[in-house]
Length: 212
Image (cartoon, rainbow, N blue to C red; front, side):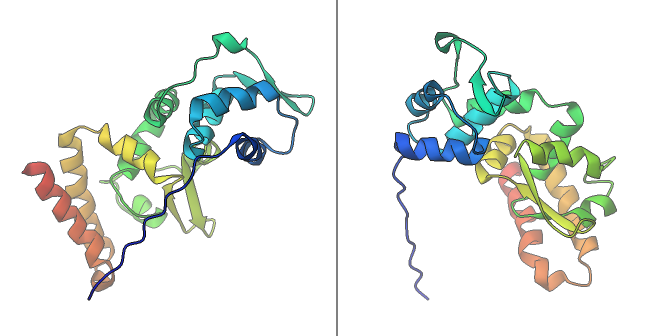
């Protein structure tokens, strides 16, 4: 069968649309015009870059909400915005505690939403799993959870976040985790093996690439 692949070329956001995106991220509070200017000049209109820049600026207290308006806490010429999405994300990730780092590293091994049941069930994949620990990562818009309160799936807020984290991992750690996850998936889905054969096969494929 022939498959047609459609490529979408998205135009960079102009200043007006950047302002609208900032309102969407920050809420309908007053936003200083110079913040729009800074983001517009540094982001080249890339939506993910804009989102990550804003999250980073909030976490570093460069901007804060005061009296129902956002304010800059630094002089404009002293504000330094990273030049790439990877730099921004790595700066945000480096500020996390070790448990959060470990959690994100393990989750980056998966290339699809992860059932929380699997993480609870298998200590070999992630030790000391804690629902409470995931909430701050969701609040920081690094992860998303979808489903019922006790039976949900976890996935990254944006595929680029997973990609950047995964690329930083040590090769030996990747090999070890792909093997553990493959074995855990076989046991966890023993009665639904045909429905999950693609995910299990992907572990083998990843291991072959890492060893080769």
